[in-house]
Image (tube, rainbow, N blue to C red):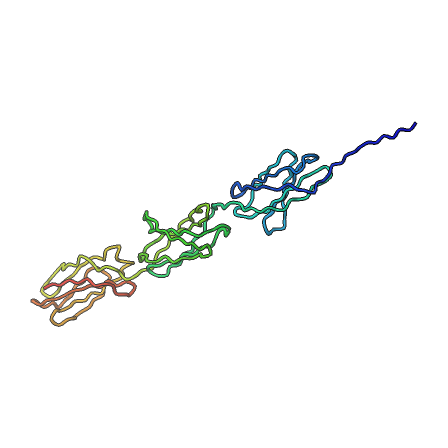
Length: 295
């Protein structure tokens, strides 16, 4: 007698649904991806696909444990949008890939800094320019400057990330300044560049010669001595002095140019009032006048 035996054989079925990825940004270079299992029967693992938004190359992470429903993607780019999708793996094949979900990594504060390029525009102004280190996430710049040897920094803030130059004004003539630049991010400020030093141009002294005295008088001559203007008013290197000797009742009688701080005028008349003034000359430009009268 023949017996007919019917056996029921089941095959792993590939579902048409896909898990929905839930994304959590952990920082500037990592994203946590989690999901819920669509169907527990027959699931062997998961595939997590990710790529930069606008890119064409997908990266793949494989999860072999069907009970693991989360994964951390690492070594990502800061402040970059990623598109992420998940698919379940079965013995019979791979299920459908979920629709991509987009998320942006956090900003990061870079360890590099822009290098300032300096150009002296005159005795009181310096142009500072630089190149952006990293365009992604930059909100602006901070330009620090101080006199060499000083302790007080001054700050100029640039709010436009596309502006990569700035003119520092109202500086002191013939003064060395140290200047550095840093980038600004939402997450904070990047490191300051190594300070670069530059000296402003010379200018006309802003103060007169000081301590003018008559150092010697004879029957026919008069010698004057003086000191250079105060150091903070010299505005450069004093090259020479233009000296003017005046006879009060007739006006100008003699001029003398000297690189020293003393001058002698001869042919002095006894009982006559005279005036003396010295102009310090720098770069062939006359400065202010110091005047001394002697009767």
